[in-house]
Length: 374
Image (cartoon, rainbow, N blue to C red; front, side, top):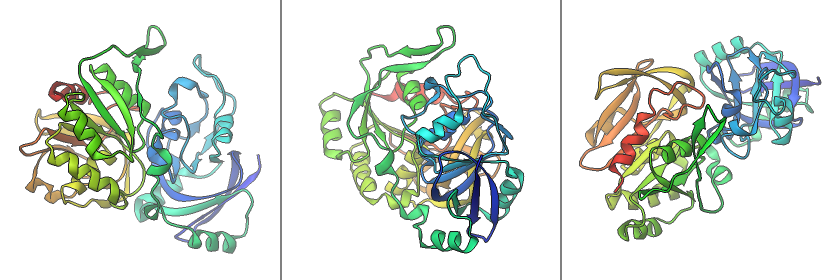
C-alpha cells in the first residue's frame, strides 16, 4: 500500500494508507453508521462530491458483485475505513472492493482512526477535505483545498442523471432465485425524474405494480404534463440525489409547473427537499447530516416507530406545516421526515424506504403511491 495524505478545512492533517484509485480529490467528508452494504453506499449517486467515513470498522470482507450496484458508476470522491480487507468471503462475491474503486476512480483510505473522524464531524459538522497520494505537503494541500469549489457550489445532478429516457425492467431481489424479478406489465405508468436515482428505488416502484419510465433531470414540464393529460402516465416520482437542493433553480422552475397541474407526485430525499423548495419553503443544512441504517422515525399517522435508512445533509423547514401535514418525524433530532401537501395528491419522505442497505419497515410507502396513481 502507498501513503495518502488528508487535509480537512479545520486544519486537521493526517497520513494513512491507500487502496483503490490514486491521485488527488476534493470533497465533503461525512460519516455513515450502516453496519452492512458498503457497495450500495459507494455506488449511491447521492454521495457524489463526498468522502464517506464508515463507522463499521471492517470493510471489503464480503467483496463486491454486479447485483449490488445502485448505479452504473461509483460517484463518491473516496471512502475512509479503519480496516480494509482485500481478501473476501461471500458466495455472491465476484471481485474485490479495491478493483471496483480503481475502475471508478474512487480513492480508498485505510488504517485511519475513523472513530476520531466521526467524533470530529459530530462535534464540528461536515467539512470539505482533500486527499492525495501525490501531495504530502500540508500547506500545498491546504492551498489546493481553499482554491477548490465547495460542494454547495457544484451541480452534481448533471453528472449523475441519465442521459436518455428508458423503461426500468426489474423488480425487487428474489432470494430463492438469486436474481431480480422481471417487471410485469402494468396499466399504471409513471415517470421517475432522475436526480441520481438508486436502482433499488426503481425496483420497489416496479414491484408495487407500476410501469416506470426514467427521464433525465433536464426534463421539460410541458412534455410530462401533456403525457398526464393524455392519460399516458398517472403520476410522477422525484428521486434522491446529491448536493445542495437550493442550487437547482432550473429544476425548481420545472417542478413548480408540475405541481400547478395537480399531478400525483411522490418524492424521496432530494426530491422531498425539491418539493419543499418548489412550494416556497427553502431547505436548511444539518450540522453533520444523517447517514446510516438505524434511524428511528415516528409515523404520526399510525403511531408506529419505523427504523429507517438515511442519507442526506439537508432538511425541509419546520414552517412547512403551513401548507403540509407532517406524516413522519425523526426521533434522533425531531426533524421532519415526511409530509403530505394539503389538498393535493403530493407526498414525500426524507428517508430511503427502499433501504439498500437498511431495514425494510418503510417499503409500504411505494404501494401507497401506486394506489393513488391514476
